[in-house]
Amino acid sequence: MKRFIISGGGTGGHIFPAIAIADELKRRLPDAEILFVGAKDRMEMQKVPQAGYPIEGLWISGLQRKLSWQNLLFPLKFISSLLKSRSIIKRFKPDAVIGTGGFASGAVVKVAGQMGIPTFIQEQNSYAGITNKMLAKNAHKICVAYDAMEQFFPKEKIVKTGNPIRDGLLNIAQYRSEGLSYFHLYSQRKTLLVLGGSLGARRINQLIEQQLPLFEQLGVQVLWQCGKLYYEEYKKYNSEQVRVLAFIDRMELAYAAADVIISRAGASSVSELCVVGKPVIFIPSPNVAEDHQTKNARAIADKQAAILLRESELNELFADTFSTLIANEAQQEALSAHIKALAQPNATKDIVNLILND
Image 1 (spheres, rainbow, N blue to C red):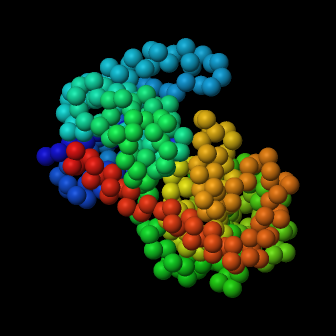
Image 2 (tube, rainbow, N blue to C red):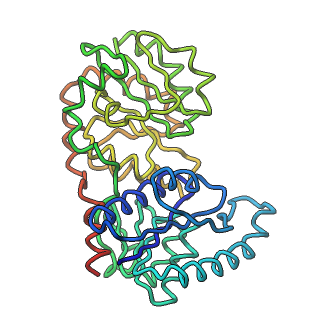
């Protein structure tokens, strides 16, 4: 019986790929034992058990980018997480250890490599995270989603697989009428889907609030996922033309109903949107490490596969950019075709092939 440890967390962008890999391993090897390792008090401690897998927590957190007392604890936390990782690995005896990024994966993948256990890294972004760069030397294989990743990793270890995405997104056209009816939208109107991540994106929400008169003028209905932190503030805009939601549970139906999408540019979102193949305006978050969302969005926009607007450009450029896009069917079709050409829908299967055939 095969055993696997999977580690990744801190944000949904590290957790959901990890769960997708676990699900595919289970589909191929129903008897396999899978154990997750995460950071105590982070979102993986809820999300992983909800997906049906056991998880153990390490006392670890990332370095803060500004001076803080938490940074003084970092060496102690890191040593503690290395020791706990060693005891978990000795007890569980995994055949392979898979890291999908985030600081929790650093300790367990590092220790596994030192103990001679095959390790695999999955890097979601176009700009590699600090944890994965640190782990690259001892990794068996490094699965990436973008070209030119040899600037971060040894070339001979890199395999371009794409990022794992959730099930149900491969043939969304078939869900269009179900999506429109599920969200109470009109089939004869264009639909704008607004995604700000599970917590929400303050600047995107401010933009949508400010542009509601423009959307009405253009006859566009809005499916607005404002995030749970902002729902109380924005629910007053619920109307026939605007659907305000804290969270979208049926993403495949939301994607199917959409004609145009506004989104942040986290790696998992970008990979999903390539598979979905709708015209996208990326508004990257500027508040992330190494500005990686802008780099993710630029990698798509440079191939004429999406529109990239920085937060600092929204006041000046958004209204004209959006109005032109809604009026121009040829531009919509070109963006759709180009972004779909970048899709890597078999990423999860390809990653699991590498793990099982190594």
